Image (tube, rainbow over all chains, first blue to last red; front, side, top):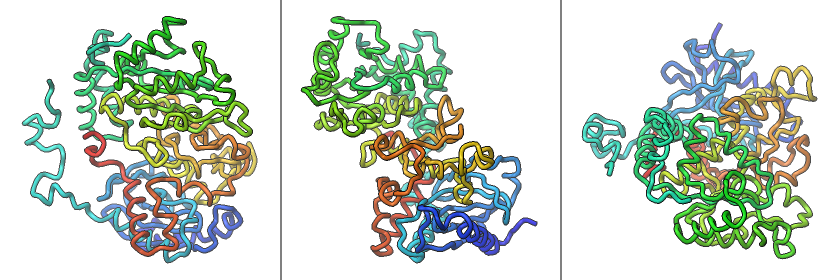
Length: 163
Length: 363
């Protein structure tokens, strides 16, 4: 059965990658011994669960769509998902424990992080940037936020002067 | 020779290309530059109204793979578009002129378009023995290069040769092959590394410069950010296998057939900044990792002297992330306070997001 609870999803994911770390990654030069696996900020955002997964060899934004949009995608395929910060491209991955997810790389390898606290702080800050609505200076001035609006279209100011 | 005030649009219309195709080309180009739909309109507008920019394309010590890549741009219009958009006045590989006639073109362009033409350089000059290892038109290439650079508006360094030196500069570098930015120090140089660079990247750079009349935004190493700010590793379709610790252990094993990660087979994706894993090659058909071979890191400085292509990367700590201009704060993040961490995180998050707004690039 598919996981629908964000916290449970984060925990399952962390457990899965903890095992991978022990089994396959620990002896490789890309493994940062001062870090551990941790799921940060997994929450429901509309139709998707999103959060950041920290491991000693990568930090990814992880997405679990609750609809079946990934059912027809091949693992390794790329799909886009819109967040307030902009559109992020995710790669489809099949994970035994949780099923089909999307991953988007933030950092890898992880040698710039001296300890898990720094990594966690970075993940929290990155997640905040990704999911918080962007304050548009134009909108704050009472002007339309979008560059394409009816008024400028009709006035022809989108295309500029053709001399 | 020079097209006077003729625009790109005039030329392609004369060649029988429809207005519809022209607009399609503009929007495809805008997309490849990572710009929004408004930029396509601006590109179209510029190509219809601005006179064509003359380009001089010189060859030093090189193998011509950059030219081969360039003329194989996937878009059906590329042959007409790019070769019409730029008035390619001199390129000893594809021009009809030869001998004294060819040399005369250089002089003529230099005089007529002083400070306006773009100098595209493929290959590099060897400096040893007063440049005698590369003679072009009866004199050392380095002299010709310096002369043409003097009156150029901007200079494009095509490929790993012009940008970093490449194999002809490999230790002990007997001819003293030298990247062009060590020879030309008073002009803006845009580096488009790769061996060769991706065709769409090359045409994208030329289109940007000719359309907007300036260089695109560059990183600290002088590469256009729009194509060189992503690492192969970050956008690789095999990345989930790396994350899951699933590696090819030897050629043609079960893991290789399943398409697992090639890190253990020497893939340099984790330290290579290029657009291969997103733009891909041959019109987006494939790229080395997709055909089962690791990335050799051909767009990175010194890749030819960094050990075997099949040696596993073990010194990732020394290069890679910190070379990315967008992440300069990261190296210090381990020791400095929360402000630096937050800054690095925000920068990394923004870097992931597709541009919502093309204003920064096209104004």
